[in-house]
Image: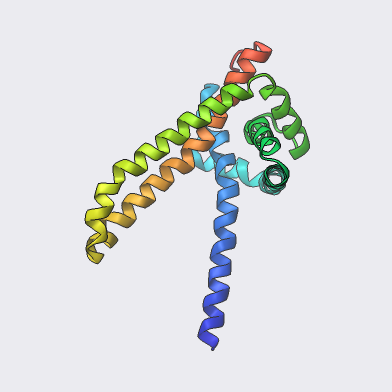
Length: 191
């Protein structure tokens, strides 16, 4: 019985760490890509240090966005979609302009206004890319799935690399979208 309890607490700990990393990673990618886009060469280590300072506001922002999108989808689907696309630039705004969660929310809402249909198209294109990658990996998974050793040696590392790629793709898209909207709306040059 003690073994079950230890395993349960270990799984809960892993889940908490996983959730923190899911929240932390988009902020890290936004800082590193944003700074490099502006011509300032920043290392991933420096990005981690800057992101750690914003961890609590990042958690609050993600929680607020997640709850609003969830309730928007729960009540009616369209408000959830509008909120999701209106807040796509909130994390890059918070991380790169040193804003609090509510200011980043408002900044994203202002930047994405009149561009949400374009953002919808961008995310449809990204979703299509994900589907194509998954479909292209299906023959490999069919061959690998029949052999447990091959699944362990090839399938698991392949899926981890694909997941890592998509973990970076989303924040990268939103960061570049943030800069694109700033340049288009505010005629800001990249500093």
